[in-house]
Image 1 (cartoon, rainbow, N blue to C red):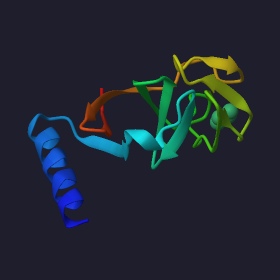
Image 2 (image 1 turned 90 degrees about the vertical axis):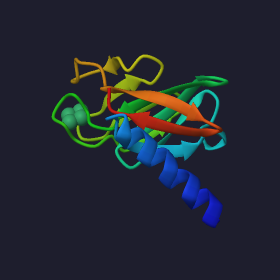
Image 3 (image 1 turned 30 degrees about the vertical axis):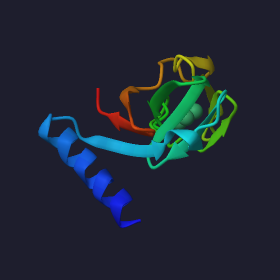
Image 4 (image 1 turned 180 degrees about the horizontal axis):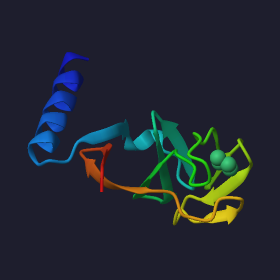
Length: 116
Ligand code: FES
C-alpha cells in the first residue's frame, strides 16, 4: 500500500513538473471495455480494449454534473442530455456541444488525465 501511494505521488509530481496537472487517475483494469466509470469530475471510458478516453463530467448545456453512465452513453439528468463517450458528441439535446476531452496517459496500468 505504501509503495502504491509513493508511485502515485511520483507520477503526480512528474506531471506537475511538466506543467500538466492530473485531474484524476484510475487503474486501467477498473475501466470496463465498452463502458465507462466516473471518478471525481472525470468520466473514463474504454471504447475498445486498450483505448482510453477521458471526458469532463460537466454538461455543455448548463454546466451541471453528469450523474449517469451506461455502456458508452453518459446522461445529464438535469435536462436529460446524452453523450456518446467514444467521441464526446451529444446524441440527445438540449446540449449541442461536445464534452471537454482530457489528455490521457497509461502509466504502467494507471490511466491518468491531464488538462488538454
Ligand atoms: S445541464 Fe445537462 S442537460 Fe441541462
